[in-house]
Length: 79
Image (cartoon, rainbow, N blue to C red; front, side, top):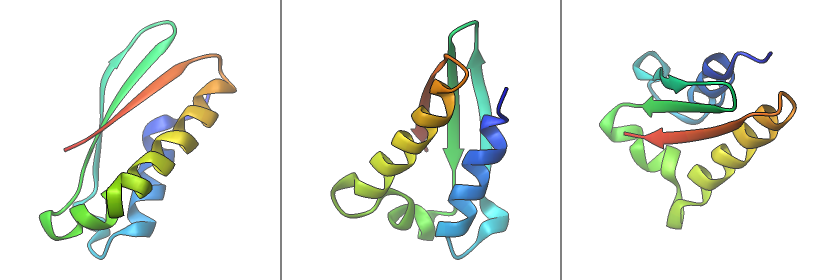
């Protein structure tokens, strides 16, 4: 089973200027679903979301691909 928190953390830290401010919380997990919450510094929010949400969509797509290998569904909330 993949460590979803660690993977999301690495992706987010590569995108932001303040990687120490990246926080990933496991909000909910059951047999088939995982919900993660990503928080970054206010100045880095635009870098994680991207123009028209393209970066956020790409992050969610990568996380869904990782979770699919375990037969799970993942939801990433960006706060």
